[in-house]
Length: 371
Image (cartoon, rainbow, N blue to C red):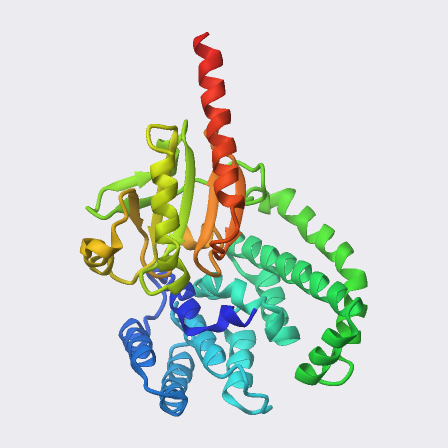
């Protein structure tokens, strides 16, 4: 869970939702400030330097949200404040201020949609949950309300899983209490008892009435959502164009260590699947397309397969709920999701086995049609 709040994940998850024409733009260039923050954080020498950097940008982002509360950038600015100050427990500290501003001013903001998954994280507890519930109740956009309900479902499911682990592991529960306060584990376990009913209610809301079908179903066996991006030459590409082949969607970035370490595995996979109904699509969330093209030109980084680029904060990342990378989805030749995984373990062959099985299914079906 902590990985979610690592700066790399912040870079990946940060998104700017464009304001409507009648929305007042931010007075400061938020995009430039954000890029500057990420650049300086990556090059900072030590924790002390990063702390000073975070203090500087915390003030900037709080001021931006205060002076331009209706701008589409305000929710993300406040979320960055929270992420830079996760350890802050002061009632009047920057984290508490940002959460209060989100709850007071941002539940109807168009820009809140891209922040719902982080807001719903169990690490933000009831404070984050109140904001998400406010969005589900009051946001004027139906899809944003649907995303809020989905965020609440995921939070409850994660909390229930954690509660079950705590209930069966006294040592883990003790560690949890030390971190979040005496009795925190018991409170989580007690809350989990009603979670099942809440989850069922929220799922019903998303499958009936006006919110039906507004958020993609990424469960195993579901049809893969409509996905459009561009390749490294700028040409528009669609996932649907690959129907008939088994597709491995590999969401990655050049700055992601585990992603880079997966490259040799992908080379072997592509070699083994040569001339078979299979395609590997690496989907880059690097901020600049040039970063990817330059990376691929290095002989040691040979990646002879299909490449798409979506950049930072793409709707594609939202559609596929990318919270950490590498994020891997395997789609069968009929366009259905058959496998998904976050992270890569070189000693785990589940991914390769699943792909081999699905490729064989595609080949068998094609052969049966021609016989």
